[in-house]
Amino acid sequence: MSTPANDLDQLFRSHFVRVNQTADRAYEHVRPAYHFGYSAASQPSNQGRTFDEIEQDLENGWLNLRVNGGDWASVREFARAGFEGPGQQGRIADAPPPGESRDRASYSDPLAEGMDPTSPESPENLRG
Image (cartoon, rainbow, N blue to C red):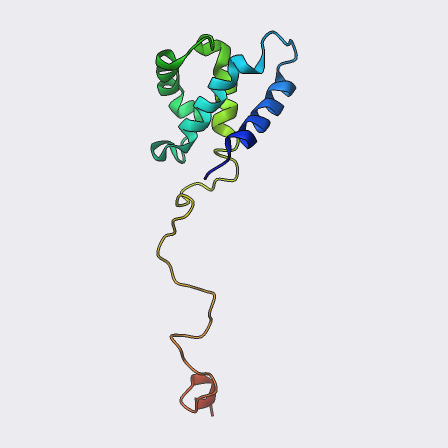
């Protein structure tokens, strides 16, 4: 999944405007938390996992990353929105990552391995 940075910022800024009713800080202060959560959702090791399942790892990572972003408690919900937002929306549990597929029979062609239904040897024509 690849979402251009400008699209991400628009999505995150829209979320921020909705949830930051007290207007106690600017979007630029919490922007790193959104992107931190989004990046975590993009990691293969986190596919199929919930925010709550990996929150401790995220908190520890945030302690190493934060730059004027505030402590974990103050940015937690913004990181959650980044994690659960565009990175996880529409994901199907146990689905292969985008661009990959599991081996399975194709159902796009109902005819078996080049069988010609008009041939005299066709099962449709052997009924009698």
